[in-house]
Amino acid sequence: MRWCLLFFIFFSLIISSAALAAGEKLSVENIRTGVTSGEGARIVLDLNQKTDFRAFALDQPYRIVLDLPATEWKTYQSKFITNNIVKAYRSGVLDDGLTRVIFDIKNPALIANVFPLAKDDFSKDRLVIDLQPASLSLFNARKGDISGNSGLKGVGAVKTPQGSGYVAVQNNLVKVASLTAVPALTPLRRPPKQYTVVIDAGHGGGDPGAMDYGVKEKDITLRVAAELKRQMEETGRYRVVLTRDKDVYIKLHERVDISRRVDGDLFISIHADKIGRKGVRGVSIYTLSETASDAETARLAEDENNSGFVAGVDLGQESQDVADILLDLAMREKMNESNMFAKMLRYALLQKDVRLLPKSHRSAGFAVLKAPDVPSVLVEIGFLSNPEEAKLLGSSQFQSKIASSMLDGVDAYFRKIQSLQAR
Ligand code: ZN
Image 1: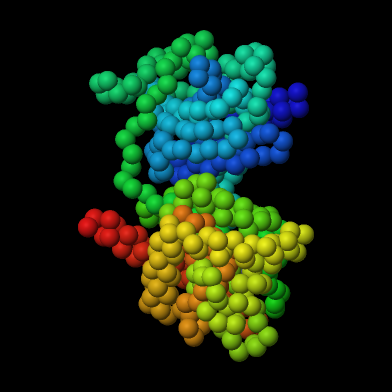
Image 2: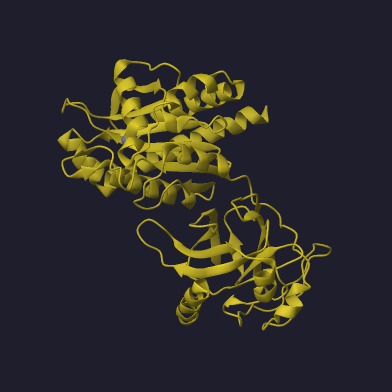
């Protein structure tokens, strides 16, 4: 099978290279999931460093097991993440200090591929697990096969809390046969409430968005999104999901789907604008409404909603959905929250002396803001048609400033939400 071959190639690459950096403990910053070509699914762990690992499939019930050296969790240790194969994950600690992550799967599936990805400008070190559905007979034949480092060692005995459901795995060189008898781990205590924020870098791939002075909207939005993610995760208060972390095209409704699928608490779509008048500049913030607040905003919403058209997708009928969704009460509540966030974001930008467009909070029927259960705003971080602003938007200094203003706005918003909930 092709994926077996691929696996062995990666296997040999990984084993030699993945040594833990001395001193710093391995941490899982985030877990993401998605579908891959065919029937497959992909799980990605964002890590603070590269790591050794081993992975294998188990049955009764069907699971994929991932063992890591002692790991700190900076995201939920147990969360409903779902795709065509995975239905949830949880983690716990084995007696020898190894951290075990278990992915519950719906039907028999095998590890097609498991490999590390080194950190780059946009992403942390990652561990990628690709799963493929398997027939029962194939699953049974391969379920114990270990991918990765079968000799993965823990740090020695760890005291097992009473009645916690932890399991004892005494040997460092664990035999697959003994693992199959291991009961499922119970999830450990949750870290303090961590909000999930979905950051959407506008456009991408074949859809460059606005372009002027050699600057493409799709590049700026991606860089600001990555910087915002970095800053937000640094606080430890947020789990951040990017709708895209590279130059790829994603349909608008898929961006909305992602924010719902990951159970987002807030959705921020980042864009940059272009207009005929060169003098116009400044940041503006948009929320959803049935009717546009002004003609300029109606034009902008049309531009942004039609961005999918470049890649041959007609979103023309989506505006009707806005009217339908607006009837929904839940939607109205989320719109209130969206407006509250927009106000706080505007204030945070002013505090950091970021130039704003006059009347900087506007509303219109933006397709990407239509998740009925996730408060959503769209931010146009400036105008590429203004030469000074185009230059500014391309600078990492300004990108960082915009991101930190957004972080302030997000902080203020969730403080407000918490105080409202505490009443
Ligand atoms: Zn745009």
